[in-house]
Length: 101
Image (cartoon, rainbow, N blue to C red; front, side):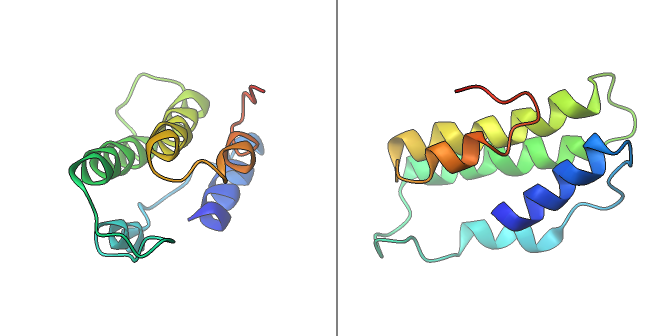
């Protein structure tokens, strides 16, 4: 997902509008967690928020600027990782268009 998000980011910063929601992102609900723990309610809840935020990136009727829609999706990754696996958070934050340290 990280690599695809980087491609989406590249499109957005070069003023290209991403065209189609990457349906394979839906594997988030069945993917194995790094530590092989089962998915808990928190993970499922954050995954739903993430998927909803990614879908908004592709919503051409949204009035929210595309860069903000993208950053909202990435921020939902950060929030989830604060509860599940904190290691990737610095790398995830670098995926933000409006990077925060």
